[in-house]
Image (cartoon, rainbow, N blue to C red; front, side, top):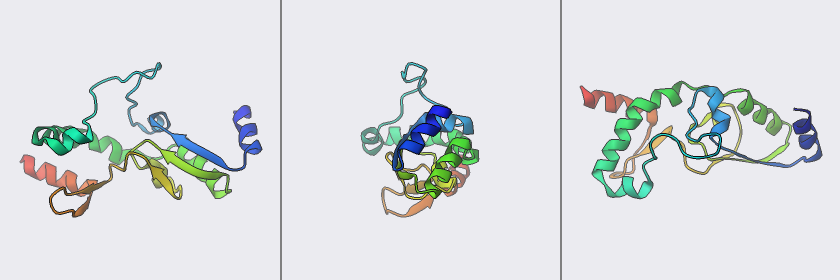
Length: 144
């Protein structure tokens, strides 16, 4: 921690790039092992999602099960520490590969979400926007 503190003090305009590791303390599973290799099932790629009704159904079936983990996750100490640094004008840019929205929920301003945010959904047919929580209710209702 001392080395990190000294680094932050020496560099007043930090560029922060975060990935899955920052959210594991919030209960979001990391999909890579210690060597960086993917574990578990491969994600559904955008080209497959857009090009296949089967892929979309598979995505939403998996999302129906996985969404509560993301919805119930709360920002952890690392998300809050970055917010505190941003409040002191130490973070020049915060970029995340995560789609969980935890940086924003922690109060970090101007987060660049490289892969989007799973909390927002747009209909492919009409373009209407929905919250992911609303889509979860629709998926549960359709299951009945």
